[in-house]
Image (tube, rainbow, N blue to C red; front, side, top):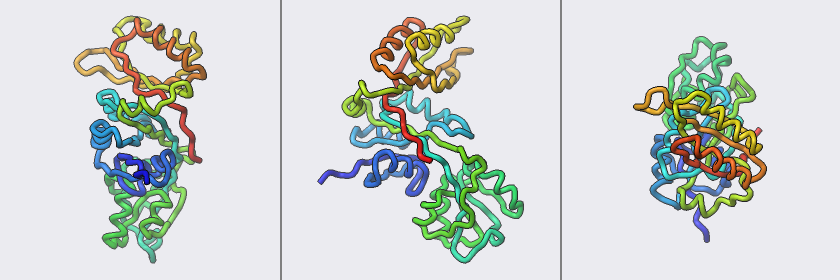
Length: 282
């Protein structure tokens, strides 16, 4: 009997990372909970059997910049992605209503994403915590009355908590994009390059006028679509930047030709992954 796929995530059971990983890899996976993104990436880097799921951007809060650098500096590669609709619920122990709650504990991003709803209840104090699911789990296991959490509705049910209010996120079009990653050797084995239609790359550019526009012109010539660009400063090199770029294409050969064409214009290029564009959970 085959062992379940081991997936390293930042967070724990019931977290959005857990949900995204199960939607991508299947519900029979074994979750390896990590306290930090670096810890999850290190597990994948050190053990080719383990894969990982990490958040990379949110439609409201923007990019998780630290995770770009973690990918660049590691031997892991992107093998896929999933775009998860973020739905938040206010949850607490049974037998309580919103009027009984004096404190909400959750991840700072969840608090931010529910700001409009929470502002309607000024009697509730907001406390930042490390994780949505962990906060909900602690309420359940420590019998914390008067305290609510913010998490996914299914997570609340797993922990036996009552849903006081569902769909409390301000923006109903709030998505987080999760990247599925594997050790570079495993990624090479399982990636079917001819079926790939998306790639993530990083490179630096000389500090010269028009250097970026030349690269973009070449990509356009090869019918490569630029779906995201994120710049980060190169530490120790004033006014030089790393450019993290997501590309989509419908012809893998044209994509490789485009990469070869821009190589003379750029520095330190690294292919972070070639994969199939991910589904979007509504």
